[in-house]
Image (tube, rainbow, N blue to C red; front, side, top):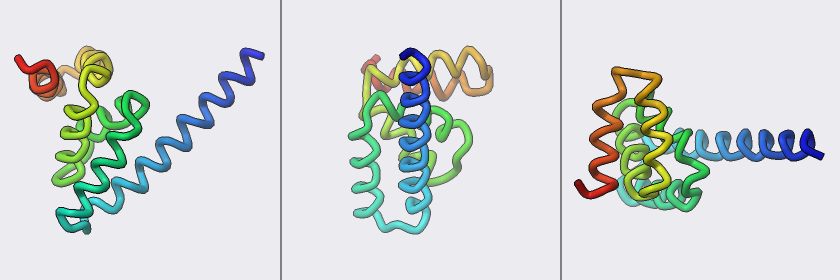
Length: 107
């Protein structure tokens, strides 16, 4: 039974990542109203999207990076652990992670 659960979990993660990639692919050409709608859709995934968003903040540029960062802030506390974990792995990312964590925690 454990193998089935693991397989299903991986399938869900792949589907979520594909969905998030599709949403992000539209950001660069979207007007502000559409960007806001895309961000709202992304935030609805909540903690499930946090790891994907952390990677987007690290790798994306421009509007995509901004939407990823704002989505992490809006998701809130559930974003903090993935940010901390990535900051430990990537020293160059630490200042960005620390900034986002401060924004989330209000400190």
